[in-house]
Image (cartoon, rainbow, N blue to C red; front, side):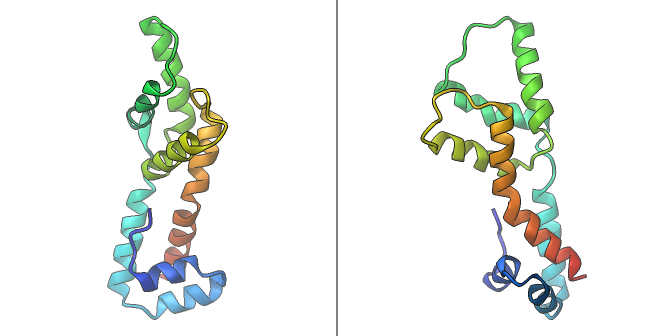
Length: 135
């Protein structure tokens, strides 16, 4: 998920936050700004249609019962409400983590996907926080 130079990636993942921020401040400002803007773009919300697009392939693995058009709308609305604010790459990683989990026998519940997605987004959030702090 993080498309950063090796040096900047290492600083964004460094255990010592203050040291990392100090070192980032010594890097080329244009590089830091470009990285920050790219990460901010990656943090934009998926949106309702993005949620549906990310989850629809799961229907091939976890078939659902027949539903009316209204029931499908209501069903998808719950997923969109709970996941629309998640960044797209994080949602994709959450879906992948769910599929690969040993207990993934049924279509995932929104809360489970949300937790997996935000867990996947943690490095992105940390990196963005450090880049913003280094201004």
